[in-house]
Image 1: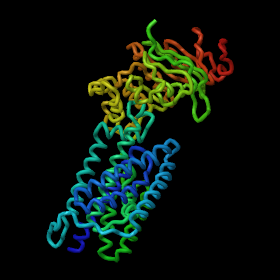
Image 2: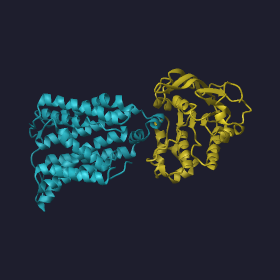
Image 3: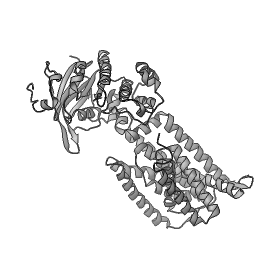
Image 4: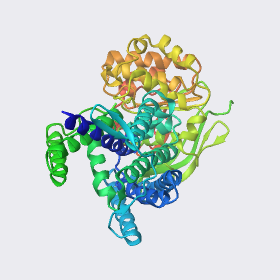
Length: 284
Length: 239
């Protein structure tokens, strides 16, 4: 039972990160109606930059990671999304995939493709409850993710900015004709989604203890699946999806090997996608 | 004569290299309801999209009042209080009635008092404010779209085929609102294919065919006029 409770807690902290990644993708979908696949590599870049920053302490780990994520994420927006968006939603997906491959190649050229050990810069120790244990790093991760996710949902649901974001997704021409500055809204969503996914990258680097340039292909991909589970464009759905992925992964890890747990997680996700292709929740 | 609210001069425009508007001139003066009539494919909607800034003309100019807006993107023209009601109502079905109305918040000078005024004018919208706009009937959606445009306190209203897909009784209702707006002094450019049923609301009628416009003769009666046939000879001579 304690094992199971511990698995749930581990799943919760991993799920918090997946939720951040899922929300980043979902936010792009909810405003621009496409998928910026280069965000996967923005996650990798943020992780590697956090590794560099962590050599000089925890603050620089966050500063490097977040600044890098915004710069690279916004670059991917202008290079891979804006020029092809008017041709249809499939084109930015392909150009951003290409831009992401370029980023991966760059990271591997600089760092090699092996995992790098990240110095332990987060406060040591953790919270104990019953037989379970949660490191302070994981507590921080869950708390920050929770605050940001709730903030994102509230802003999107019930603010002027949120209405500008959502209306430009559903009807860009109409939104423009009613005074919404479309290029600004799209840039705004690129900045926020880059920040969220950058934060996920920093957290993964600092809590996992090691990080490599292929982070986007592992954790990033799971976050993207989490978005699809929740329903593209639905931010609360992205949270549910993120937690689902984290929990399935961590519970199956309790009972199987690490290689199998990844496979089981994806099998469960696959089954969910077959049963409910549009995701668990509708876009609002 | 008063300064026109809208002045379109020598506009050429189209999509992907295909020219739809061939040198179009048109003015709307304050308080006028100009009915732009013509067959399907004549370029009526394209002209409205050019005025609102969604289609870039290859030649000519668009003035809103004194302002040359030819080079301005749509969201900048919206700030000059030019409101567009697109064909098919332009209601976002997934958003609530109130969220649809509130899209007018992005134009200058909006206050929630304008929303209250919308609810007073169209009580059905007050009753359905929390519902998804897609659950409204076609006529109600048209009222929603009109209310949203009015909330921008427009100097010029561009209305594209409001009768599309509506029962004749509802069309009469919508035209009643149009007439009321005209009497309130609004300046309106109304595009309609079913001109016979709506011509009574117009203060002036302009005919459009294959990317050209001509002023309609004063005694024109659309009831006697087959628009498709009219399309064959609008070289200035009365059909």
